[in-house]
Image (cartoon, rainbow, N blue to C red; front, side):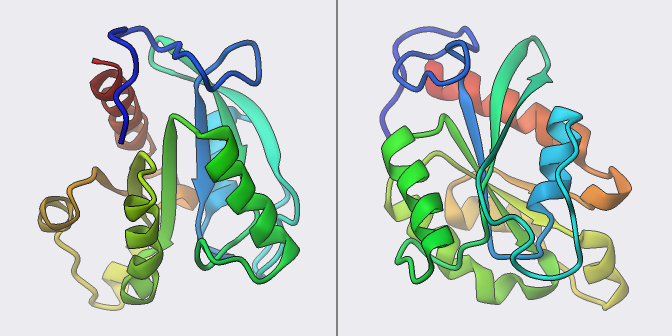
Amino acid sequence: MDKKANNKSCHTSGNEHIEGLPKIALVGTPNVGKSVIFNRLTGKYVTVSNYPGTTVEISRGKGRIGDCEFEIIDTPGMYSLMPITEEERVARRLLLEEKPDVVLHIVDAKNIKRMLSFTLQLIEAGLPVILVLNVMDEAERLGIKIDAYKLRQKLGIPVVVTSAALNKGIKELKQEVTDYVVSIAA
């Protein structure tokens, strides 16, 4: 992954869309909580339903994380970088052409094994990925244990545990985004 110019500011060059703001793209399969996290990061409401395909277009909003303002982009659900549906093609195009500063790959912690192949595709594509293990509260109720630190070490990317619907882990996610943007700008 390319390092940004030697600039520790939260405004990075080359990825400008809304007033020159750095971009955070939210990606993942349908029904993993992307829109809930979008709502938490922007304060803007995006319709959230309990069935796949609710987000059928890209939603954009602004969000303040620490001292930085970001453009937050909620994408339709996608299963891989090899698109089948038009929604997946739109999301893939955004990732590869707009080159977001951070890609939050949001996964359902209950089904992590099925979702890690997409994480690996994102990493191999050179995208600046943070893995977000969402609905961790439900996973723990089912007895699923995930060692986020070990996963971070194995994948070589930041890993954050959240239960976005309960607003748990959002503060930690925001801190990880801030730390990550500063590290890639260094």
